[in-house]
Length: 343
Image (cartoon, rainbow, N blue to C red; front, side, top):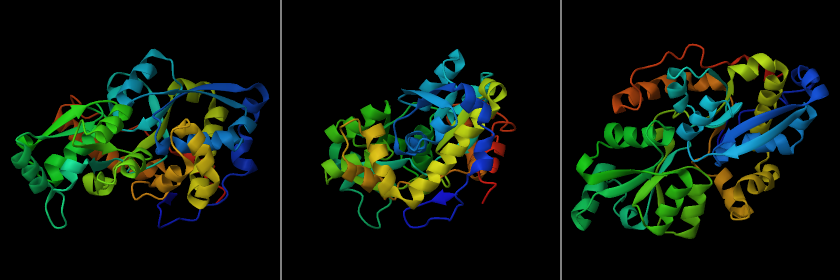
């Protein structure tokens, strides 16, 4: 199931009694889940599934902790303080290389990381001009390289930015400088002009472009890294083994939520506003983010396996990984397949 602002692929109401029936024992006694998320639009299916009551009906209680990046969340996985990981898929390769046994059970979005240029840099991105030339002209004008903010090495945003700069745009390394910072800091730095551009995801893209018309989205996720694998939901092996019914119920709820977001964004917008806005982002911005070209929800984890392997190969080239780690066993699509079996 893949949803864009232009195309909605019809999916079944998944997800009836057969899919949820496996959660009977979990419902009877209740199962607490410790969930780590990055507060971005791609995490919305988790909150929608909870608000719709599907997780509560299955006996699941979520305790949610927010993180600034996927690599930071890996530390929590390693310490045993998380059961559920909701963030970019790339850091999970690092986790596996450290012996952390996690399984990707569903995706939530792809091609979500985009490049946004601040006003001083954006004016050099004119129609027909190659991005490398835009960066060159900025440095020629200012005498300094363009400072571009993104999350730490090893994250999907960092990998995506570097792939775009060096492999797609063919930018001169002298013309740009990559600055590592957290997701909230990146948004604020772009707004304040402390950096000339950065990798953002929705709703941050809609926030910054709405507040400053000079800020522009200049490169979409697909052109930066084709079929860029984005946010996934991964469960620890411990949780899968100990609570198979609860694990299935969580995946079923998330798949239902992805379907609902695609079919009825107006219904879910208030839920997303409450979960991600924290009183700082209004409903209009959330609705704009849901309709953004940077938003592409998808639930099928099988659709990102090849792109994940390609991203991992590139991480090795960047030095973010010492070596490629086999993806055999990282993806566990059977829970997703059961969730959509009623279509």
